[in-house]
Image 1: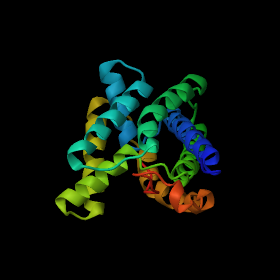
Image 2 (image 1 turned 45 degrees about the horizontal axis):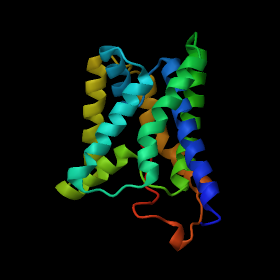
Image 3 (image 1 turned 180 degrees about the vertical axis):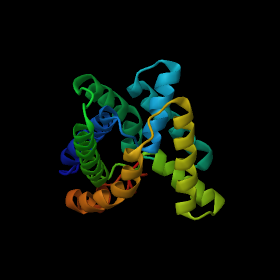
Image 4 (image 1 turned 90 degrees about the vertical axis):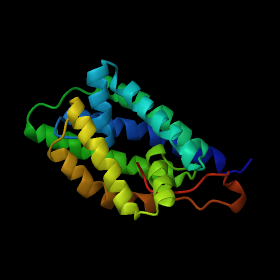
Length: 210
């Protein structure tokens, strides 16, 4: 067993846990969510199921779409689909709704920064991409369309569907779109690990975050 494996596993699990907490903070802020979280919230409202469960169902459903695309995944991909939802649900149980615009902005900003840091942790562990990014890269490879176009079409479809189902779209949604990239770009090098060649399992890598 590689001496780095316990540290990598710890980073992966901590990163996925904090990612879910970051999502729950933005939900409680009530000023808008990332596109996939808008969809989770919309499904949660319409199906009358917990937000965390809706997140897991979406993650597993997206992962199933990898099969016809023949994408390779790692253990981190599966854990991403299964663990972020329960973590987000725990955060929703523990964190109250923000009261007042200042508190809403502060909670949203803290959640966004935490989510970006968590992204750096779990991607830096090198156990595989998240389900949503694999869908993006798989469709890019299959269709030949530019990756920015594929991602934009996926997230626009997800956002509109989630909004139609009742998910929260607002200034926070725009802030997420503008800031998550630069924040992840700051945290990814900070938490990156140098992995031995033999430490990587098939399907592992360090793709962009969900």
